[in-house]
Image 1 (spheres, rainbow, N blue to C red):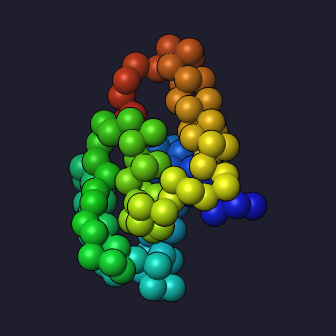
Image 2 (spheres, rainbow, N blue to C red; image 1 turned 120 degrees about the vertical axis):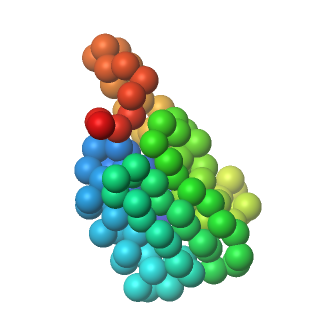
Length: 112
């Protein structure tokens, strides 16, 4: 599996299984892929700080495409756009999001 494709699948997990996504974030910290993180389970907000000093966050209501970009920037800096599987990663997230919209799910990306 390619790296950005894997991040795309984890991005979807942020919306479908927040607790598992949080475990993955903890793993990223444990293996020093990120410098630090802060999780607010009540608001489903995650603040991330990368090893190269960039701070970013995922918050309730952000669309999946932007969530993928944020995670990619935190992990791979500006080089994420040059990864060979970038197009496939975006396709995975976009197809998932379109499917949810077609199912009639309102633009409510997290359940209250």
